[in-house]
Length: 599
Ligand code: ADP
Ligand code: ZN
Image (cartoon, rainbow, N blue to C red):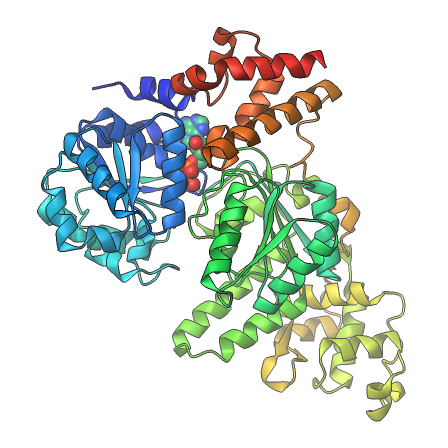
């Protein structure tokens, strides 16, 4: 049997395994069953691809989405690995050819969708093969609790019955206990070793900003921090997806939309463009993203607050799978919270489920409002303890809290004076002493609190309201026109028995740049090399009809620019350059580097 490290070096061109990869690879290569829980970008694919290459026979990989299979297969073929996929889009003669190769033992990996694998015909076909292992990707699809339940997944236990000798490895990025138990149960993996990795994503930089003009804030963020990069923007509604994509396009950013209300063909074509082309920003609802394993997504932006820390972690985790710095940017406001609350309270769920969802929403708000390290906060939510990360917004610019007791007292008494029957906007109008129709029809200009809050502006007042809601000093009564109401926690504040510290309004410019984009400052010469290599990569990708990252990752290009190798042995030291790629592209790369430096 080929040794694992040799396979990693020669085929994939990577110098070393990461985290638990080696342990997993060896466990499976020697015939063990495994359940692998690893965060997005952790490198799950290698955990089955390498054992598949080490063991004799063909590995059967179960994967839920055609686009994903195609991308993994394209990447493997670029590495010179004999991989193929069978799906509804495969022409019959091609399918026959693939089947022949599998029988002949010349295929290393075969990707199939679960519904095909479960047909009697395919089950019978598999008995004619020498199977090295079964890999079940996105294994959380087995669970009702998971976010992507697929009933066929629950029948995959049949593999254990029919092929008890073949090692099975299930993989997912969803860590919760219930999902894990479901996977072990339905896939009959009771004897499997469980590999649970840390969910930390050290290359992901968290930034949270307060919403005042989300689209404009988004545009500024993209322009200042990730101009020209691929990214995903998540919105709460379909309408907002369309508006935002249009707004970005109007401002010269190549944006596409994706939501469940669009036609199938358009959705597919947008997804494909996003995967294949460079620098596209995908504006989407949460319908987009499962298993999007594009490695070079440089940012994930939420312009509305996600409904739980789990959703937030999962969605932002789609950035930076290649390990290079990436940003998770979240823009939120009180209205987001109100809207999400409304959706939950008005939904069809059972009472208990509503309670769970509401508490997740509270946890999400707490993340947004925290003054301590974002990463520490989110990992703590998943039960992991860690040190402050040093490059989230709060670590870079620790918020200095101030004594806000007087302002808070003004706000609370104003809410009391309007009898807890008005929403935030109206209460703030009273504080600021604004004359408008609503104010005069309620005669609120006669209240003692009218105009007592002019020392702060509207944004500052909103920020205070949000922090008080997050601390449960105030509540928003959804059933009664989103009125602000006081809770019991108000009393000591109003009576002057307690003081309160709050965060001042964040300065947008200061919270900017968590360092995700300026880690690597290229010299002019390096910039020239970089552009030349990217152009060359684009051309090769087009010729082979694969995404650019299947030819070489950004990380490889960056290593080339930094080391500027001028010989084949120099190229051998480059990240991501395996033997096949060296043979195939070595001379062309050296030529490209030489020309760009001579210019
Ligand atoms: P996951 O499926 O866990 O989200 P992938 O398997 O797609 O992650 O891997 C993410 C990226 O990291 C890919 O570009 C992959 O080639 C790269 N990668 C994985 N393992 C290693 C390693 N040991 N060294 C270098 N790069 C790696
Ligand atoms: Zn931090």
